[in-house]
Image 1 (cartoon, helix red, strand yellow):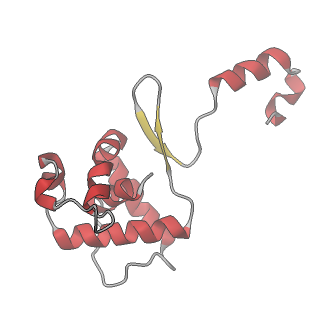
Image 2: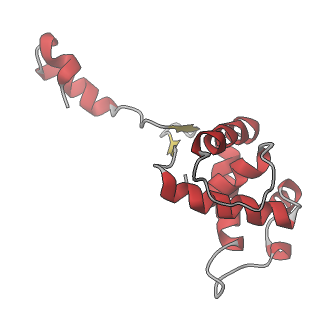
Length: 139
């Protein structure tokens, strides 16, 4: 997940805005709020609007004002203080631990998780050419 997608998920959760924007000593709490936000918004919304958050909080030379972003993004994230807090926390979260994966399937769906889906071609190869006793250990 990008920092913009993490920002959206945190904003959609019920995380409280505080002065501390570090995830030190509260990584599990922040991850719980991330999953809550993903469940509320859905992976597709995160994928579609994640770039908007990235554009708003980009390098100052390339930053886009909030008023010029999409109406859907403005309606979803109206509170400026909460947006900034969630973005700072999302950036801090990226450095603390591996980010959750955002996967786009060939059929068009999206999913969020910690483990990438297994490659179907690799599975078919292992089933066709490896003995059944080594299937579980194949890498």
